[in-house]
Image (tube, rainbow, N blue to C red; front, top):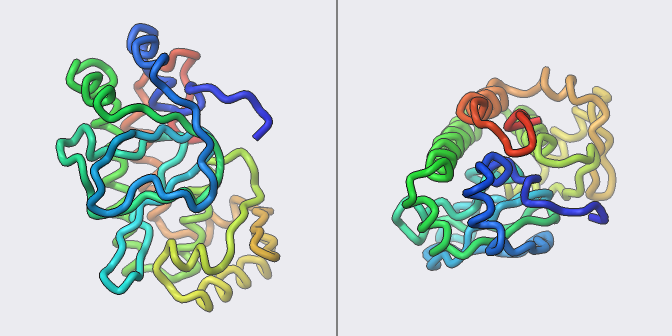
Length: 247
């Protein structure tokens, strides 16, 4: 949190040519994204797009009963608010901060204007949207066909790709809510991973001790999501050198 923050920490903003970035830069508002903050609710008219840098935002679908499950996560690889440029302006899902951090906010009308210029920003946003759709589709399949332990490994690995720390703050209730499973299932799965020496789990903190171990326990869904994002964004030239879309 004490490190200096820059829009270039978000891969989409970092990929913009200087002219496009300079046009948007004065309008990018740095914001703190605290844990649990609701960025938008189902059916709400979207006013802003959010470009996370160190935060992670969870996209949720909420049932009439109040139960919910995460359909995708958005971190420094993307943007929250694709309905703005896809033409819908609203969405039946919600967006809530699940890992506290920072990001940048841009007024929705300015994002639409930049998108309609049909420059690199449009190309980036469309490619990112395809990657996000892949993540949503894979999440649905994973939740239906794979074990809770596999789902937890996928979720942890995708989280690690978006943060600099290997110690994550999360309770069993939070993870269970994200995955749409029972709390007891998460506790059991985390216990297995801890006994295997892959994580250390205590009091709402998960320290990843062996990332490669998690990868061996994860299903193919993690690799599908990561590889598709890298494929779609790999040929993008960043303003500050060429970097991978996912570290």
